[in-house]
Picture (cartoon, rainbow, N blue to C red):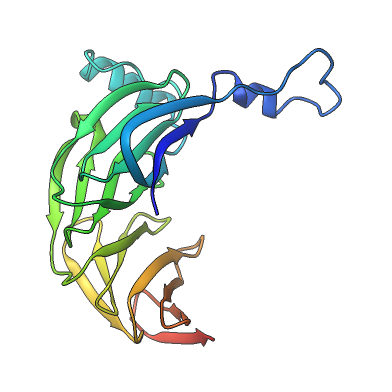
Amino acid sequence: MGISASSSIPKGFEAKSRSSKNDTKGRGSPKEKTLDCGQIVWGLAFSPWPSPPSRKLWARHHAQVPDISCLILATGLNDGQIKIWEVQTGLLLLNLSGHQDVVRDLSFTPSGSLILVSASRDKTLRIWDLNKHGKQIQVLSGHLQWVYCCSISPDCSMLCSAAGEKSVFLWSMRSYTLIRKLEGHQSSVVSCDFSPDSALLVTASYDTNVIMWDPYTGERLRVLQ
């Protein structure tokens, strides 16, 4: 079930969280910031911490969009929209439209390139470039049922999508084409994730099983029951 509002980290949180545990005298509880998205929120994703060059490029080429000096947050909404927020200020940066149904999951590329992938109940995944005002650069089709989950490999070479038709799709993040389908689950696949070195992929299903795969060969390595 989704939620109707999102909470973000307040300005100064990073410095406070890294201070000494004993340095608490005179400090109250951290304040929260609530982002009113106006409708049910189903998917959430933080961007990686931007590097200084990324911040400069955003400010230089997209002057009408506020400079991203820290984290940004993407929220996937009930009507198919995606809202992009500046975390420290709570400022709405972009509103991405294209999906025709609930945006169920979101994933940023780990490289910090501000490429966002969204997965929806409209059976598609969409690729957005936030460095180009949130331009939609690709629509990935092929799933026959709701897409529940998407995950980008840490080396940014592959995208995994999990959907209701029991199969898992692996896509190239370079060409945005389908690499292979992984079949082995007996019910809807609802979650997926890569290992930190991108060498393993795990998927979870309503069939109560977790399957461990080699994403490069498609070999099923282990079933956790």
